[in-house]
Image (cartoon, rainbow, N blue to C red; front, side):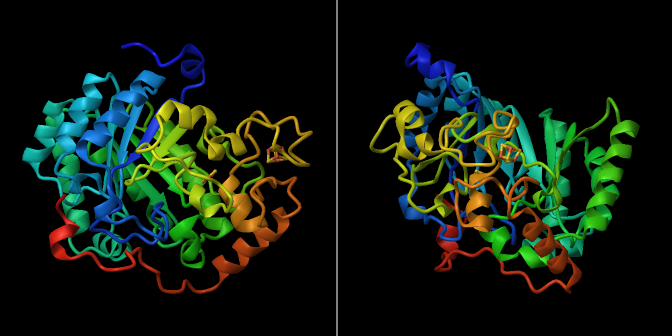
Length: 378
Ligand code: SF4
Ligand code: FES
């Protein structure tokens, strides 16, 4: 396969996050999808996704993350996986797991699927199903996890953690071992979109966060060679921010169900950005020259304290979406950073919210409820 242009390949993203659909049977209150979910009618067709994947491979992308919503609601998932495999992409299916049958999993593996990432809400079934707003979901996930191992695919358990499940972190890690996962991602919630709307219901106490770090540390030691544990620390109690997305326009490109190309899944929360669509412009051109990508790529856009900071090429100023959400300016230092003038305010806010009783969840829902006919079929 010929590269698009060598300079494009040198600057290529390593990963493509393909949001195949925003449809999902679950309603997690921390969903990373936007508040304004895209409907089934505007989704890219099979041929359009196949073209995007071939373009991505030519650009130099190595890993394809098939995401949603719930990607398995697309009946053409096997065709999409097969095209990705032919193009040489490593394919990771990010799934909530409640719709997959064993036969379909086998079909996906036969089409070239490389890896499954299964999200769980808790290990206590009633609480897991309450968080997902889907009865019987946890039992199906446990079943799927065993099938993944039996089919011979590597499995990662993705466990978003927050004040309403964090006290069972040791059991969550034990679950991952029990179902044969090689990796677990213990991910403190990042507050954008739905999670921001549910921040008070999700925010852990500092004590819970400290304890979670200790549990992870001890488990890493105990489970060496058995389970890899990734740990996403919570921004609101951090000292330094994370290099969100590996740096804006550096590591990851995100394509929405309708073909909009975003530097990160929450980029649409930032006003003033222009998002090109793969229906109108080649992916490589968007990645290299799109307004939204150029806006915060590198360090030229930075203001103080980032501009003169010696960590500016380590964390790239942290998260643009969080800077906008908390500081009201996407060019500001991420308030997770101790050097940000908004840092103390952010910590105080987290402490205050975590101390109060958790309010009810605002569940993820499309603006207009999908009819049963469109909810589970493409
Ligand atoms: Fe990162 Fe900016 Fe904070 Fe420096 S001042 S550590 S570049 S967010
Ligand atoms: Fe958008 Fe961090 S989520 S830059």
